[in-house]
Length: 343
Image (cartoon, rainbow, N blue to C red; front, side, top):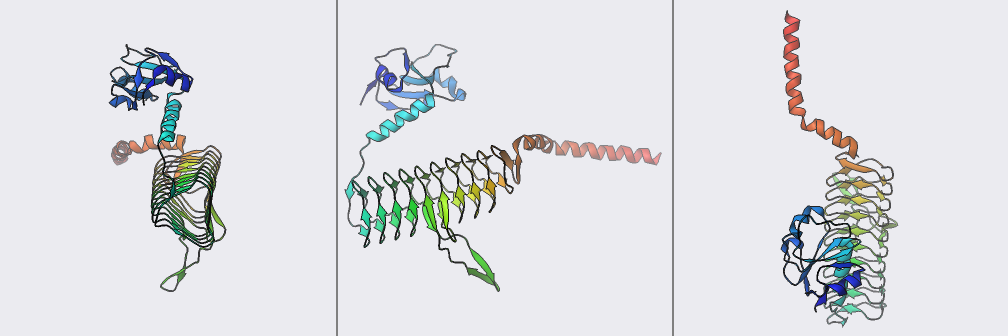
């Protein structure tokens, strides 16, 4: 399908600057723009590409001031990034989705299924499970006994949901996600370890997205809880009895140890780690590869391992980089003092 600049501008509440009749039928990155495509400029680091891009239309912020003549038509909007995301969502909504129940599928005794479902071939649905309306379960998904899944949730191929876990509405679970495996609980027993039964579950509230190959362990007792609006990247570990607060986000390869509590709107960078039984206050931010071993205050920004306040860390890092130079100065001073004491 082809769309004119003026129609896109109307849809996004934007203003056309250039040819309102120019048409596009695809999207592209601004640095890889092609004729007939729409791109966007949100990061100033990419501004140089707008002066040479072959994209026919570029979304820009209303505040953008070009430094040179432009080869493309602009659509000015409040936020180019948000506007482009809206277009991608519209495009995604237009893509056809599978429907119906393929075969073979196992549906256990007492399971209840909502309306307008898709269940892919080789899916397994355990006894007593409850699945809401408009849910999509792709092939090779395993759903254990007495699991609950809310309306409009999507579970991609190969995801695993263990018994008695609960998933809210409008959630997305990507391939390989494991929800409800046993928590890492062992007690010393002579020369080895005795397994502590993990009898709790995992509760995932509404509008949560779980990345590919991310693992969320069931609680020893009670529940491991992922609050509404949380977004988890790929390859994340959330241990037993942890709680991730509402609208928090975590980047790939980060880990939350057992019984740690994250507040609302926390941001956890890639490869960051949180020690067990800690409490991160609302708005806490951990930079990539940080290791947090203390409770935090609201809106704290932490860096390092062990992590501490980022402003102090940056001052310390300046000194750390100068350590070889400082060491040479100390050695030189020692030599001078030694000479002075020998006089």
